[in-house]
Length: 514
Image 1: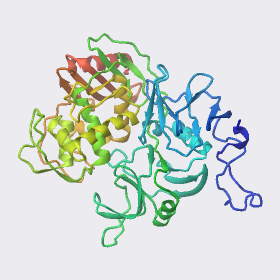
Image 2: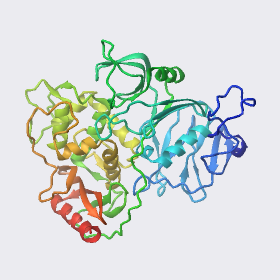
Image 3: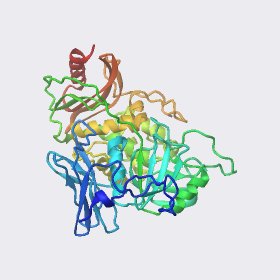
């Protein structure tokens, strides 16, 4: 039995040089008791240290309350629950293996291993601090990038060894925004030349798709890049980047945090309207309050709502500023074909076609940029990373009836997009982005997403196939109790999409708006 009260690693400040001659004043080292974690005890079974904490730690990151549980394991995965039955951070294997993350549905107890990648819950301060403290308690070596305080920290075996300021990050709301999540150092280069920005990135450490931690970039002639937002990377001063570069190794975990989904105390009094649509959801996107819904956890085909995930994966893995080759997909058709006869097209134009005119051709061309099967695999990995446990994606366009999800999963998806990739929402409502360096090459497009006679629509996506019926995700601004709120309406299997949206908005306005 290992007693956490006496031996756990946690935050503590050292001021006694005589007792700790090798520690710098103010360093964070193992302390005699937890300063940021609850009372607990630890037991060891089969080389696995399990931390038992007695605390109500219900971590809700959507209205459906799926909980993320961080677990370290080399063999079998174990986890714990507290005295109220809620999963907590927890199992640590003493063997040195990778650190899977487990999503558990607290109602069905179904567990889903979560791979490294974007984590929507990492935008919540409580979840992030619990995850970080779990790493510290386990004596893990990892990097913490706090994009709210703009500090990057390196922990060696649970002890803070280095802390440096972050000088630049991706601009919030743009396609260069750096997403919160749990990542790993994939590779290291003393000087990486970015084909995206055409700049040299000293002391580069790749951690996700096109995202790096690196020193201050410079152009090929040696001129430093001007201060400002990055293209999604985490920029450090060169000497600081070199320090971190020399400390980390491939597979070192990287925790990226930026507060976006903070606590919201806004309260509704929900009642259920009568709709014939089998799957619908009306929710406040910021507080996650569900105002009305039906069959939230039942799977159904989603048609072109799939393209929101296509856009997310494209933003992670493809340079949206570049031109790409156009292969002619012969197995899909679009209502408004625009790519026939073209050899190249800008990625920005493809994103416009994908999200505004719901182009199936654009979806397939985007997928071919990394390989179609690989791209579909990345879409499903992203779904798992976002906690979309009931979502399966079979193609980039949504034509297949095997693209399935639930209203609850789609709420989590649109919440993530709204908070971390808002440019996608902006494109669905208005084909031109003020932050884009280039303009589209197809002129004025026909927007399929807008709903007739509604001026509060700020973005969304529609779809329709024989298997799915009419599907829709739409976001709307309403004044409620003197506050501007963003409401999400999700429909699956509708036969009168526009009428259903109007009905749900009328319901919200009659009961909550004043």
